[in-house]
Amino acid sequence: MSNSSSITQFLLLAFADTRELQLLHFWLFLGIYLAALLGNGLIFTTIACDHHLHTPMYFFLLNLSVLDMGSISTTVPKSMANSLWDNRTISYTGCISQVFLFAFFISAEYFLLTIMSYDRYVAICKPLHYGTLLGSRACVHMAAAAWGTGFLNALLHTANTFSLPLCQGNAVHQFFCEIPHILKLSCSDAALREFGLLVLSVFLSFGCFVFIVVSYVQIFRSVLRIPSEQGQHKAFSTCLPHLAVVSLFISTSFFAYLKPPTISSPSLDLVMAVLYSVVPPALNPLIYSLRNQQLKDAVWKLMSGSF
Image (cartoon, rainbow, N blue to C red; front, side):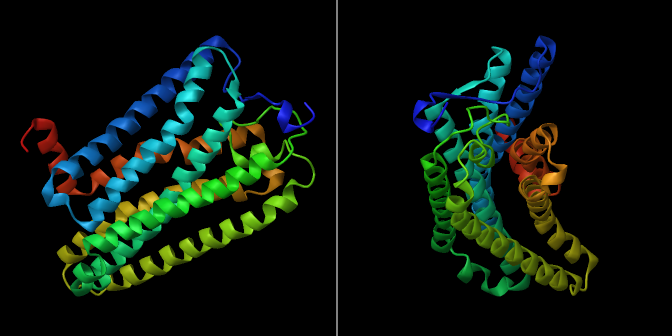
């Protein structure tokens, strides 16, 4: 295939060659997918239905649940279908859609996690100004900024990626269409054309990372100054789940994209892609509900029909 105009479909990387392992992959991903939909759907519905949870922290958590359901729904169902039907193909337009949607949901989630760290910083370090700095209008604007920035970032990267001539065949060495693996199919000038967008993405990502780190340094300093142990425990219980989610998201995605080329291999790339694209959406509801008694009580009320 000499260029992208002659490509009508891409070949995705299969998890296994034998039928038994393909079915095992299907059932494993189905279990993870249903767990992610159930957990995030419960959190979304609980927050939407319980007026006691209509606060900035839970509003942002509701948005996070929607983004998690969107990101895992972009990649996992197609991978399950390919394993079930012993198929590796994805259409050209399907690949474009997958690249755009995954970049959109992942980018928006990263920006939202940054905003959530600001929410925890204001709640713990500036509690008297919480209602002023994080009013309902401000929360909506910040959430909209996260979604909008994610949309623009995904649009720019998708348009740039698929405007490049693809001269190296149509085999994508990943279980879903991912920008770095699509770029490997392009001609030698791909790096120059993508360089500007990569610099912008790295700048934004690093800026968000520094903001999160600085926020939590201030948070821990404020918490350690609280005289009562009960007060410290209550403060930690509201910020530790977010810190755990941020750590899981950043560590897996940064390692997947920034690991040295010398340790890169198809198997390692596959495992890392699963860790940052499939595992976090399934674990996030569990992480947030383990240490949040108010959320657990609200979920129980919803399931028992006590609203």
